Image 1 (cartoon, helix red, strand yellow):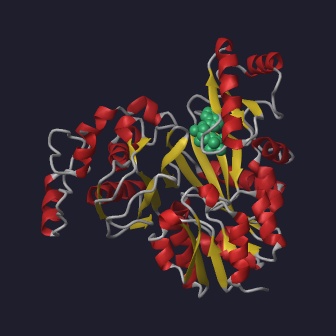
Image 2: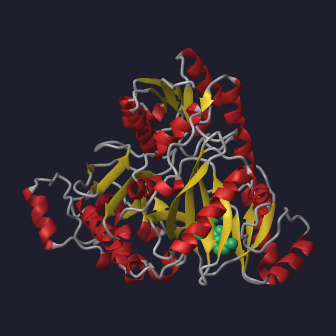
Image 3: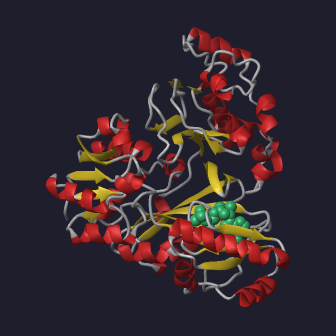
Length: 498
Ligand code: ADP
């Protein structure tokens, strides 16, 4: 079996670092690639070797598959880990890597291709009796026909781009009058974002929970699941808070969902780490949504509750070894929550807020994990996803994980940009989140910008602790996360608001 000795990480930021850390633990040397905007990034400094792949825009750097493969040849790289985003779900790239005799740490090009199209995925999974959201199984083009189908499905419906991702190309249609306009929008968004205007129609589940199952499969046909992640706290159909396990999943549902996820993976001969996404309605019926053929942003919550390093498993699988983990050996220990720390202004419709991290002090302590790629003084580049960090907490119970998250958010000191931290704190304190009765409409139903002012307060004990820990900087960290416009006189945040 070929042992991988050198890995190139075709990615940047926190995920590049996260992968390199496991590689280092395994005695595998690492090659970073970087754009001109990332020259000083932590992932570049951490790697054993680093190569500039081009100017800041992704199309000229992180997406240059030809250059990346050439670097691998020159540096004798055995394998490429694509992380998430960029080239991670690109069939052509996976094929070119294989053709160049390099190991792709991920599934086969065939599996990526099938699961990259939501329609092809549904067709493949259909062979296994997997519950599907009622809807069309092929692309719709004819409007009159499409409207008939929508009426049969029953409004509200969702028009979705087959090639969609990142919540784009998705339109809710409440009644027939709205249909034409929303269909035009969905098709044009699908064309501009994915170069493929194919759309289909699904029943819009009005109060769903997003629940997904982590799976691992080897190249010998063994597939296991590592339980669920609950990802219903979203804005723009995009996740902000994830947790494992889900409060809404009973052992029976877990088993049924796990089995369905394994069947979805089997339907395309899947190997590597993958995620099968479902939505669950109020009656706890669950339906297959799509499969993501890569390491997921929120994978750490699964790592925390299972004790399994998913990147290590991915590398072993890519080397060709059979899975050493058995389904019956896996169990859930404790509870983990992840808050995505985006440079976004939650009070202003979660719009990106790029700038420089004037203050950047990570929280620490028992049950806290921070996966990030930034340091104080670094700028958040406008060219890429505005995620600064993933803050993960874990405790013996959900209650404990929530308490730790609130404490960790209070300790996290960021100034210079607005972040989603105050919003995440608001969620941790909200009764609907605490009692588990939330769905993907949480933000629309319960969040208003003014909540941040009243809900996000630093309390006296933390103030004292921060002072005694000498965490004060010239930019007052106690003001930085506040949304109190009048009070924040010295912070960069205040300056940016004026
Ligand atoms: P993407 O690939 O763009 O992320 P998904 O199909 O994974 O698209 O869906 C993203 C989110 O959109 C889901 O987590 C859920 O909140 C919402 N969604 C998708 N399909 C439906 C549906 N049929 N009914 C209600 N909400 C849906």
